[in-house]
Image (cartoon, rainbow, N blue to C red; front, side, top):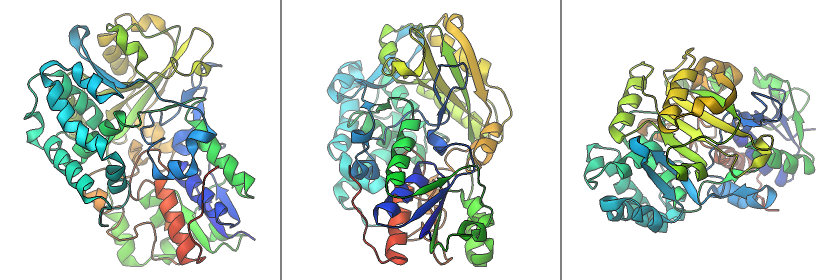
Length: 482
């Protein structure tokens, strides 16, 4: 007999499964693929011995997520926290360097240093309160109203035409725009400004850690905990209906780590028309297309300090980035694209043979794009690292359309499982005090289509599981630590 079934083994599905199993329930996870991990899979995409992160590679929430803190992820896997959280190269060999040390970062920003420090210092100081406010559904009363107010005012500044008001030079604004662009969308906009303020604060807080062994290590740690408590993981199994999920199990609870659109399809027979209409109105955003590189050695950055940055944002000035993101929103593939780069090899030599390196890159494209962006990404890197082409040994490209087939949650290549807009941060996928619980008895949605949305944090699964424990099993939330 199985008490609960989880569909999908991404970080949210595994977080839900771990939480339920820790409460003493018998849990089974169904995964359509041949391996676990969803957005945290790692694989040899180019050549033998070169380990690439298939989807997520940058993990600002690995140390900051309340779920991962409770789960004590840092005691289960090795997380290296670089001194440089991210870097932003500009033409002429210049670069903005975001150190974990906020003061050191500000000291390198010339006339804008004090303004940058004043922007981030209060959020960093109140970071736990900001995290609690943003990493939940937004209809509840914030536990730290001051943190919510400070964060809200800075989001209002950096998410509107006021975003240049405090700066006089170009490096600091470019750095912030590069972080804003993690959330695909026009700039300035409240949703992108809010993402940039949160991620930027974490860069100067606990940092942006690199998991040794790839992002897969995060999923493997959760799976190991689940299996140690009697849980099951069934691979190569697609669940199309709730009846299939409950077959041979007698499960009282079904938690779906699927998109809102897939929820509507899987649970159609048990959901009321009004809820199905709400799911149908949930929209999906533009997409990512990715290129992984196997390199013969380090990237030859014009600015030598960039070699120590595990994450880089490429695309030039704030104005250039805003233009490229606006082009994506208009259905255009930018000639000068924003490129997010992760170079983990300096911190994790296990990713490639001795002396070699891996490089992870993606750019934003219109939803459903079938365009191969290899040349555009390569040219953008070459702009700031002349000679980059000479160190390329092999490459692997994944278009937005291919991403949508690799993971059905990525509709059109939208890895956020739903557009990240101000409206859909409140309506995700419905307006509710408990958006993880559906009207179908015992059925919960635990994907990034629910709050707090995208990122590797496990919180969507954790909140859904806690709701199921309370509603269906009358059990308290369990301890999750080692």
